[in-house]
Image (cartoon, rainbow over all chains, first blue to last red; front, side):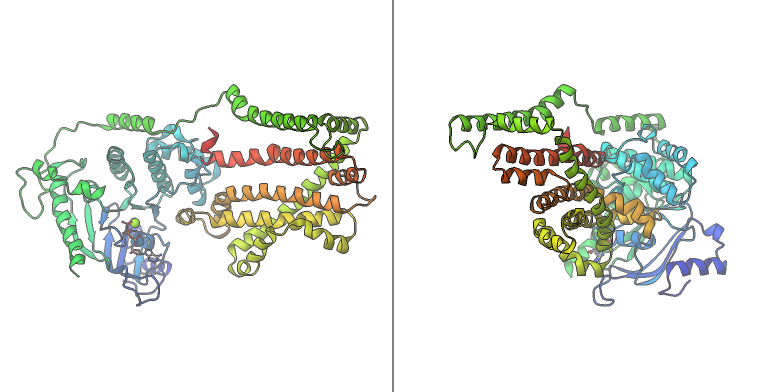
Length: 274
Length: 322
Ligand SMILES: Nc1ncnc2c1ncn2[C@@H]1O[C@H](COP(=O)(O)OP(=O)(O)OP(=O)(O)O)[C@@H](O)[C@H]1O
Ligand SMILES: [Mg+2]
């Protein structure tokens, strides 16, 4: 793949030029090769991420699992081009991925509908098409009547759904989600899991979903990737073959969760022994 | 939250007869699902209804009782205390005239047809000066907030200037420009520009970085980001700066009007006040002070308060207004 220390844009260009995985096939995929990330002076501090290698296939749903502070948000920021890897290459052939933050990050000076329209506008959607498009997206997250609502008039679950609709408005083939449901109550989170699964299967978008909740990961993902802490490294992967629709309380989900939790705890214990 | 969910033991007990292999996930038992799409929509509607923030309308009577009545009572109390002090003859009549004499002075100004002219002279100067200050301070604030070098250079001076009483600018302004309207506007600008610019800088500083990053993931960079993300996000601080800027404009103008006297200058509120002092007419002096106060408050209530309320309410930052 591309050599280290090149910019993402160059990587994308060279990948397209080389034509090795034709851009059409690669749309919706993410490939992360030998990514290191440290903050501050290079080499001075322990890296946050070390030699991360990960591929997301088009249309795949991958959960990244890891303890608090292991670098999950950092990794998503790198993929979203909000920050640059210290070394290594990240390729997102489909163009700028959509990112849903840990907090809803909706703009409080705009209504729910206008938040979505801003995303459409920045993407270059003509003015006349924006409003109907935004309304369709709100329908998709079942908030049809909330176009004119202000952010502060929405509940936590509704805000996350508007944020999801805004992310979908970018029409990216890759959707990055950073613990989007962590602050919600269990019932609302359950409902949003179902919504997300439905929207994922309807739109065919690739999802890279970050969480520290093992059950959530097993409930949602086709593949669960476990990251270690300090430095963050890919420790292990599980393929989740449980057919959708799943429920978080399903026995199959629980079984696999127990196994993954054991591994995660082992990882965390390792730090106590040092 | 997450850990309690994942470590709960019940999940393991439910899973009796698990195959115990490396991946106990192959058995795709098609259990009857209690929920379908319809139920999910209903559930969501229920959650939304339970969670949604209620915005209630306030009745006009409530507004009257909560907003209009208290200031009226306060003014009435002040007038009553004043009247009592006069009746008790705590001091000479020329130092504390009867409230009725102040009213007479106002009535006389009205009859002479000068009341409106005096108020308008000052208000038009104040507002015009404020608008120029706005036009200068806004780009200045933007540049100071966003360009590190300029900020390090003039940022501290700008905040220092805010604590300098603007009356101090009157003597140099008179020497530079003489006794004319330009001198008045100069004093207004020197008072209001730092205040408005600082408000904008503070507003921009307080923009959560999350908004800027969210804007970037949506594709907003550079000027597009400034227009769609940075400026709207900084608006509450900017509006607070405008309000303060008006207060500074008005104060500076009154200082200039009281000090600078010349027949070439139209008669404004400050000059009226100073003239009454020269005539040793305490009722006129009090009237002058009251008019300055009332005009300052009226402009703030009529122009700035509604703008600020709109900005804050649309963002849900006005909890106390309910
Ligand atoms: N801009 C930064 N400068 C310095 N250190 C940083 C920066 N951003 C993150 N870090 C460090 O990198 C590590 C990983 O942070 P990150 O936010 O990616 O963790 P996380 O896995 O998302 O945690 P959480 O589950 O709590 O959200 C932390 O130790 C943090 O202190
Ligand atoms: Mg995080």
